[in-house]
Length: 300
Image (cartoon, rainbow, N blue to C red; front, side):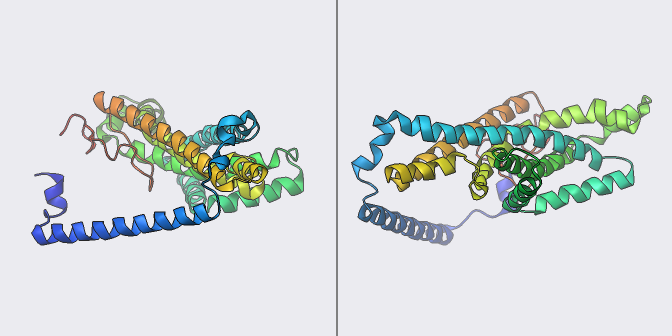
């Protein structure tokens, strides 16, 4: 029996007509909204050709603004994903510990940082670093952005580690114990390597979240792509085109990372390994059929 027939019945003629009507109404509303935005931008002279000329004729637009902002975004994202990976590995293993106090403390830390908004953590960390002079003044915004992204995404990765180990067949752990390995040795030698391999697509997908959330750094004066786009718009009086170009750059980076996650998942599926997805996050291969869709390699 297919998954579709289990989840819901196929729509009948009346339901299909109703769905088509709702889809048509939704499309008309979307077109009306786009037309309204287009008219407002046209009234504000934001669609005139001279507004877009600097992107093609003036090298300083890219050299002094967009590329600097792009590097700021990528730098914060790279640092955050490295530290978040270490954080998630430590606390993910801690949540799997056989020592109850360690497991409880790690669980509280992970759940706390998953619940706190990233922007609040950025502002809080920026205030601490600024008042106490922990870093140089020009590094405080970057440090605050990396701290907040590390704590939030590290908590998500910790959950990936925990769920990855729990998703493995129990027989593997029992086999390790039967040959004389301790619980810790079974975790480090047998379960954790498989869990880390399975979570690679989700880890790449989490990098998309890090890239997008780095734009929140503009609230604490971190000069990333969004901040430099705002500065570019002020310098050339083309704010809307500057933001549109920044959006295109963000979309391009995130799309390439999503495709990379899909490619990794396909390769792991062909090797007969189950992959994981971030808790509450998007499935990078939701539109792609997978041989391990139900967690059983090779099963249709």
